[in-house]
Every structure is written in C-alpha cells, then in structure tokens.
Image (cartoon, rainbow, N blue to C red; front, side, top):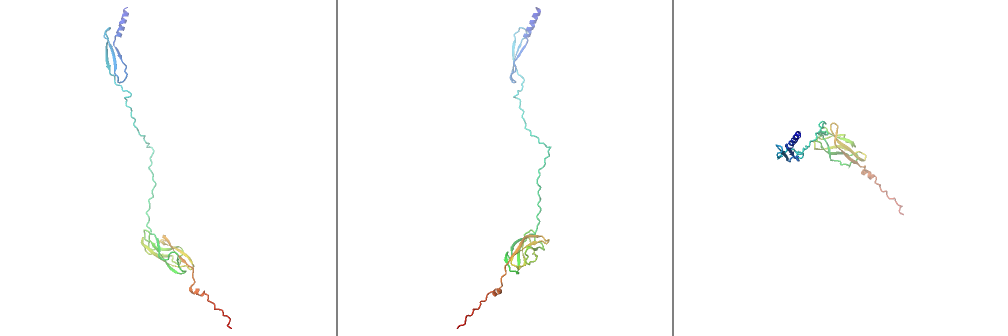
Length: 233
C-alpha cells in the first residue's frame, strides 16, 4: 500500500513540474510566443506566465543579394606571332637626263611637191628648234637618213644653237634627170653618231620635159604652093 502511494506522489510531482509550451516559429521575422506554466508546490495554482521571445534574425533567401555577373573579355592568344602588314615596294624614279632635242618648225624653201626641172640645182632650207633641255653640242650634224639624196652631201654642219632657239639648216641639191616624185629624209646627229629629234624630208616633182620653141617651129607644116592650072588659050 505504501509503495503504491509513493508512486502516485511521484507522478503528481512530475505533472505539476514546470511546463513550457512554445509556438513554432512561422517566419524569420515573426516573434515567438511562449507559454510557461510554473508551480512550486504540489496542488498549488499554476501561474500562467506570458512572454515574448524575439528570435535571432535569420536572413531569408529573398533577402540575399543576387550576385552580379561581371562581363569578362576573352583573352587573346599571344602565342601566334602577328606579322606586320607588307606593302609593295615602290620604285624610286630615276632623274630624267638632260638631253638635246630637235623639233621641225617649217619649210623655209621648197615646200612639198615643188616642181623642179630635171637637172636644175636648188637649195632646201628647214627651220628646226632646239627643243631639249640641253643645247646642241659642238660638231652636231644634219645627216641624210633615207630616200633620194638628190646630189646632196651626206652631212651638213649645224650652227650653234642654245636650248629653245631655232636654226635654219640649208642643203644644196640637184633635181634628178628623169621625171617623177623624189623624197629624201634628214635628221640631227650627235658627235657620237646617235641620231635624235624629228625626222624631216624634202619632196620635189620633176615634170615631163617639154620641146624647146625651135623644135616646135620645125614641126610646123609649110603650106604647099598652088598647083598651076592649064595655060589660057
């Protein structure tokens, strides 16, 4: 009997011990309300104590700052050598040498297709300009190149002429004996034998020969005398 009574007293003490009831936390920022039932002695009125517990702030998932992604540039490989741009080599122009030159200006005498009798002598004169950047050197010649020379010398001395000046070059000639058209070409020549400048020509026409006046007179027919008639009766 005593043992049973002792067990009941122990159970009552356990039931009347301090009991703490907590309300589960719903949110990270909501306060937790706790109810504590305290009794000091058996069969004493339980005193209900109400207090509020402020929980430690726990960051929400939505409060966490989202990491920002910083754009990074793709590194360029420096292993491959970069060849410098190549450019086509430019040729350095060589300076133009200063040389003499000759340009035809006009026919002073004997224009083209001038009629000259067979065997007649004449003098052909050309006007030529020293058109180069250098003057004609000493011993420059006017030389026969091709065609009909018409009794002229192969070369003729050229007068001293500065660059930009003009000279009249005369060549004595003789018209051929046979009728026809004759043409001869001429040109300047340096002392070393190099021809230069314009190639010019002389062209004449030898006409058909005509009979002299004396020959024409002998060819005139003499009128015959009248035939005498029968004598008068």
